[in-house]
Length: 264
Ligand code: HEC
Ligand code: HEC
Image (cartoon, rainbow, N blue to C red):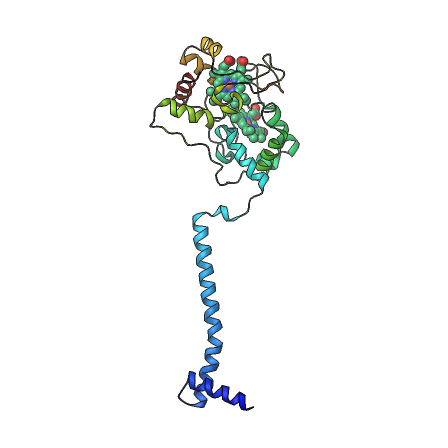
């Protein structure tokens, strides 16, 4: 009892030298308010932090499925986005459909089959067709692309096409475009060719460099003509040169030809 009284006294001295009644009241108010103020400060700090993060990167705070993320990167790497638009929004050419609705309309099997075997290809292509990707894209990658399409082609951080420097000469632009339009996936780095294409007469996708290429394609006009028209060498599972007319603008075709001429 005594010890308790002593403590009360010391508290009284510390907190309120005005009188016992007022002292207890002040103590009660302080004791009740202190945690409240603390909670308020914490809530305020948290909400400021959340507001700060979401203002910078709204979509990024959500966790993305790794398979869907890989699909988004492949969609850019294989230049699906060059023909179907970024995130499959369309708007590039009236001959290439948007892909926003196809994820719900088609099954996994149908989508995989279209990516592997292509669609709308004809022996003498007059308009863009869906290329045959079977020899170039693995089963696992097809699965990732299908997952991405079926997820509604969401925005995924860093899944962006490579930037194209436009003020450093046409060959520099062409080098970036060679990656941006996905030529590199089929014709290889430095256009060395050699990507296996079993079933085709040469068994591989041709190089766009070296003596034979230079002899046959000895003018810009010849190079540009074959990029525009494409060239079909066989039915699926053979992959052919896509038709890029109406998709790659003239200035980019010239830049691509300029870049190819810098190679061995
Ligand atoms: C050179 C242009 C081009 C590229 C590159 C391209 N596509 Fe296509 N794609 C087309 C065209 C054209 C069609 C429509 C073919 C038809 O219906 O005859 C099509 C159709 C499709 C369809 C079916 C759409 C529907 O409504 O039935 C899917 C799915 C598809 N493409 C996915 C892809 C994916 C995934 C990639 C990348 C791996 C890709 N495409 C790359 C041109 C392209
Ligand atoms: C899906 C694979 C694929 C993609 C992507 C592709 N090509 Fe081709 N390309 C081929 C195949 C296969 C041939 C061979 C056609 C033939 O022999 O008639 C070819 C042929 C060519 C030729 C003629 C060379 C020759 O020896 O016949 C040129 C030039 C060419 N491609 C440029 C490009 C450029 C530039 C790009 C990017 C805009 C590109 N290609 C993208 C597969 C592809």
